[in-house]
Length: 109
Length: 116
Image (cartoon, rainbow over all chains, first blue to last red; front, side, top):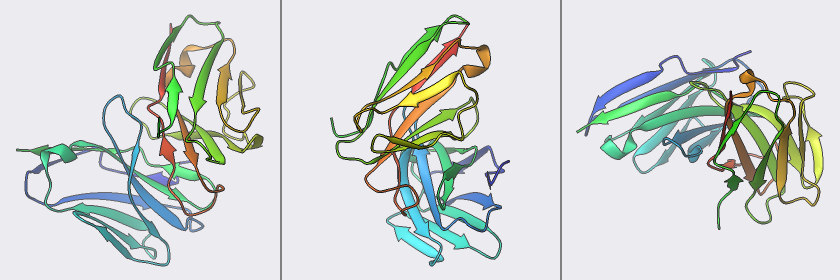
């Protein structure tokens, strides 16, 4: 059962513009949400997280938004840079950590 | 090293062979997880250790899979009589806190297993 869904397998953005990656979840027990970034042949690297008691968390160019009523979170990257090109995984946790299938972001120079 | 270390990076096995995958977590991390990542998918949970205790093995796909962490540090995931559907990247992750604590997992680079 796919409890965490990333419905866009890929996203292409121009350098300097905003990248918005989306994630939906079904289990209302999840209380901690994360975004991981993955380069080829490497493991996922933690990027940013948010607790369910918040609706926004910002770290430099990266902001995560959480909409609990819609069971939706998003990652905004502003401004996007070519080095941001990677696969981004959304994850949700309350006991187990569940992952989405990933979105491949390509930032074009 | 400071990160999670996995070996080998790549493993090719003939169908029916046994394989052993090693994970060396970050020193002092109490929690250790194994995940399986199929091509084009996200990591899927296999099993969880708190120190040397295997507290959850609900994600292991069959009794051909088992994992151990006898001294609460290094862990080995063993797959017996490998099948083609076992081909995947096997990721190990560790955390300084117990599972369920709001903290990120730190992943190794994985072992890519190909069963021919």
